[in-house]
Image 1 (cartoon, each protein chain N blue to C red):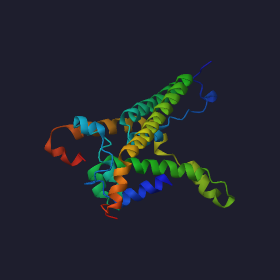
Image 2: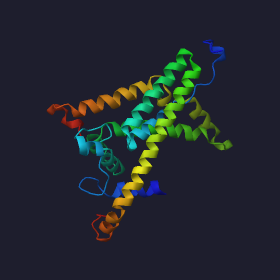
Image 3: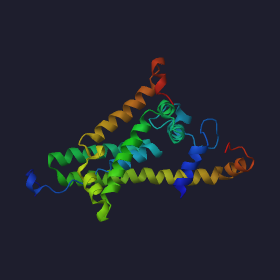
Length: 98
Length: 131
């Protein structure tokens, strides 16, 4: 049974806030924001003593954060596949100001 | 390895005026600046030690990186398992990462969304927030 008695509080589930921030910066503002919202829910639910709900919010925060990272990887792969040759051509022309 | 290469690329090449850096699709299609706009330029500036330049391209990015740095360095120190580093580990374990604060997610949410809103308001005085 869930209880508000602090003596039997389970450990607080991670809210994956760092992951959410990385996702937001890397590419995926939308999934990052969703992940941050779930992170806020984790804290809120845990403080209210709804531990099972907090656990679920934690899972969602993680999923949305990882979706963002996954999207970033996919976008990078597609981008490199399309523009990779152009980049190398530019590099071999010496257009990079190295 | 890839991350190091990417850092080197961002250090050497200024995304400004280079065509091959990926552009934000949202901005290209709608003209809206999200709160991540300008972060590639800002990373380039930071790697070259130009903090004010970085902040002018994306004011939130240095803050976000600072928070992430604090979070992960505390975490990293907490993983140390050598007796010689015990003092450092114990110190790190007693420090609180800003990101674990109860209202951290809310503050970050408000910052990110507020920043995005302000960058897109059509007032000239807000020009300094745009990338």
